[in-house]
Length: 282
Image (cartoon, rainbow, N blue to C red; front, top):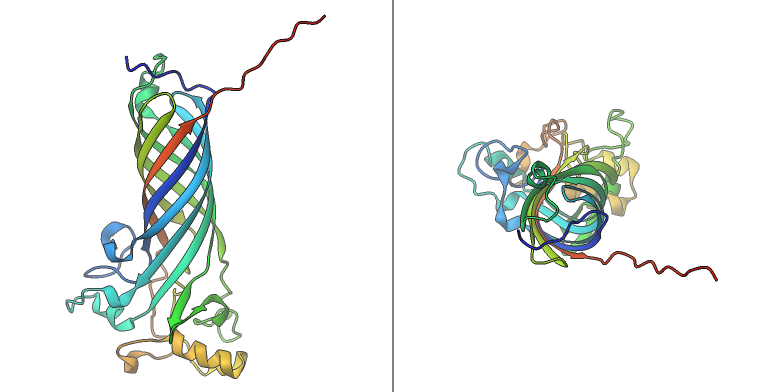
């Protein structure tokens, strides 16, 4: 026995720190770009920090509400161009960064403790899996001459233009499904530390502001002021081979949604149960 008390009906407060990796159309490794960890690049890891509260239903299940602040980025220029299929992304030469604020609600299951659910004390090491629902807000930006421009208002793929009726302005606040796997270690009856991996199933392809094809850049003059049109023209295409950029030429793969993944550490502090004092009636 490890001397750790039953967790049933206890609350915990949690603080998290992690490393984010954007998984979308920009950047990546050799070959055709794919979703998932195939295009994981350490150079574009960015930080996540968060706080949450956890209610332990019993020793093998819990619910959690949390909020995280994260940063993500992607850059075609970081690709190691070997002349394979990654060369098209390297030549495209697009980049972005975004701050992300996300709120999540998840259910966590500890399978080993469930297997030994009659045990009244915890194991010190407990693997877990959790899933739930989240909402995120993102705002992709790109650098031009030292100034960072928000990309969504520039409609770089013709979103909302009459010439592209199927392309609506994309939402920057969207739902996603968070999935966590990890292991939690209890130092004692007060403190625990989790090491985990969060993946996100999103429903947007515009976290990096690209999804479909190039458009005719003269359309920016039709819809924007001269100043805004000039910025849009410079940011919509930044190719190393500008002769290959033409209207309706494929810019990105719109069959895969964007996402980002996080490897994190989470410190949990167990709170004492409220003490109820009985006062006899006089």
